[in-house]
Length: 309
Image (cartoon, rainbow, N blue to C red):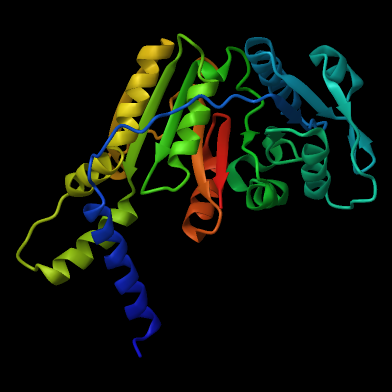
């Protein structure tokens, strides 16, 4: 029976080879718009609240969706001014639930929300933790929520609607990619900018190179080998996004990048150039969950997490 290390190597090799075998362009993937009908926001009394309510208002005004506001949790009521300012429906928390994440998830279900918006970290000012933590609420909500969630990290990222510039980030084959793209197409502004960033992580490339060198010691492998395979894998989605951009009027660009190039994964300057980052979460995949947590922790921009089981 192979030892755990050997099984891990075999699994990595299988994944790497499958990436190439499935890199067949095939037909264009249709990317229908997915837009929220009912958004639930959960102000928490921190400095992130202003960015949260402003972004929710911008989406409501543009998409004509209903906004619900969680008015109390853990004995600490949210500001009534936020509910009035948004013209939001007050959604009371279930006082019988002790944990914040249980109250948020129960409220989203009772309101019938199809999009959730939360400050992150929840009930802690961003300045108090910085990039050190996303908090337990974020981790549990991503693990359990059946609807997409937008996490807002930076209280200073306020102003122009972040959905003017939406960037989908994919680092490997991802079962949530098409659903994530549909939400990105639905949320991007009509004359905004949508990007599909395919990124080969340095650790992924190094593992792949070691495995392939063990099979072909005399061969040379480069980041472009994986970049090319990833591009071919997502060629149908790329074609679908091109078609959606022509039909709906937004600008679209495909970006392929190797992580070690040290170019930023997210757009710069959140104060002057806000953006919405869209990530697909495969909830049964441990690596996918870790990637989401790390990305939300480091992103200066709001992050949309779209889950699939």
